[in-house]
Length: 132
Image (tube, rainbow, N blue to C red; front, side, top):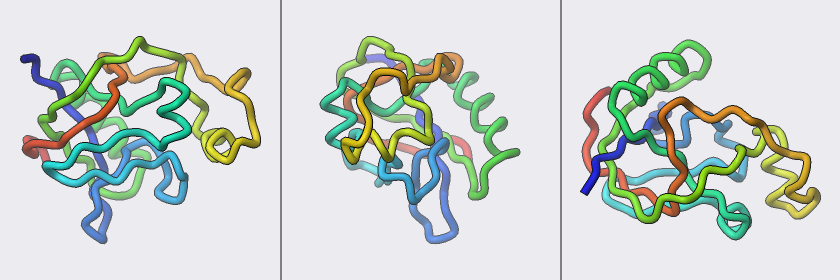
């Protein structure tokens, strides 16, 4: 079984959340150690899931980049995954809310940028924190 890595932000409240999305965004996933999580049901129905990294070095580079632009502390976890999805273009962050509400179709709301070394998966379970 391959090892994968997930970068999350630890908020001052102690919650572990998606590193790239604002907490108020409905697409933001709240992670709990040892529990399986997946994308919002509407995003999942469109074939989207959380992103994880295949290499520790890629996860560390990503975490270090986001420490400079996001509040909260970046943590890197070893994780278990289920089913790797075919990589799609990512939804622009400012359009996730409208897509979840059904106010926007999936066409025309994508960005071509994905974090280097990442794959999209159906679900993620955080196992152990390896970098705080």
